[in-house]
Image (cartoon, rainbow, N blue to C red; front, side, top):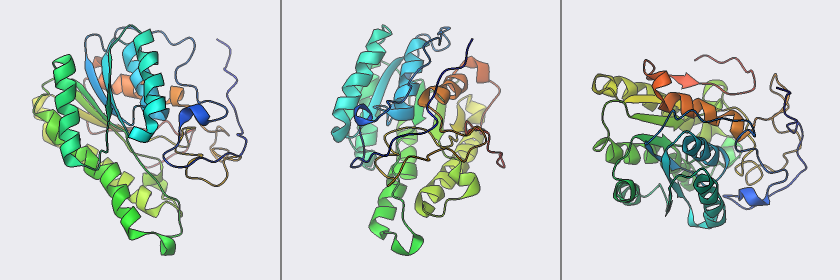
Amino acid sequence: MAPRDLPGEFPDQTQEAPGLERRMYPRPEIIRPDYKGAEKLQDKVALVTGGDSGIGRAVAVHFAREGADVAIVYLEAEQEDAEETRQMIEKEKKRCLLIPGDVRDRAFCAEAVRRTLKAFGKLNILVNNAAEQHPADFRDIDLDMMESTFRTNIFAMFYLAKAALAHMSAGDSIINTTSVTNYRGSDYLVDYSSTKGAITAFTRSLGKNLAKEGIRVNGVAPGPIWTPLIPSTFESVKDFGKKTPIGRAGQPSEVAPAYVFLASEDASYITGQIIHPNGGEVVNA
């Protein structure tokens, strides 16, 4: 198989947060043209936060190709992207439930789980992926914004996991999105990096807590990935990802298979662990 021609540089572009994938140029690659599903998640039901675009969209589409029905959570401002994601999932002959709302609201998180159960009758996979970031020098960090970042990035994982676990059993799994910034830090993403460190500890601790019940908890720590979060938070994207050993940013299509692996029986002996699709940066796992 010949290597795909993936972009090594992006034209400068900006968007207002949270950003829309349909306004990005070039558009992210969501799933490889030659990706073949193998029914690894046949008849499973997944709930994916931040599933409208970027990594979340790629995870939802890969899950659908592997046989799962998918509910996606997203902000109302992202409705256009969410509708496009639903079309992609339905093209895979699977069902998709759209659940707009704010994961910072614990009542909404509980409602998202209830709506998933009502639509599909069960819940086997929870993907905690929604996140926000606001680059700033530490001295300039808005503390209200810092609290918002923590509520979106880590508090919501507690809200959703507590609601979901009442309906999960042996063989089911939770997958959390952390980040390479947890391991190497980030001078202009101090609050964001701190939430990602908390997510890694949450993943390891909850994995131990649920191991005897047969519910696995793992995480994925992406490096620089081309998603709407990037042009909506960075002033310049031209050199985004160039400092990785591979020399370019990754695509959502290069991250989502890690979630498929962790959600499937292929990872039946893995819990409390983190996978690192980061372009070759060696980190302390």
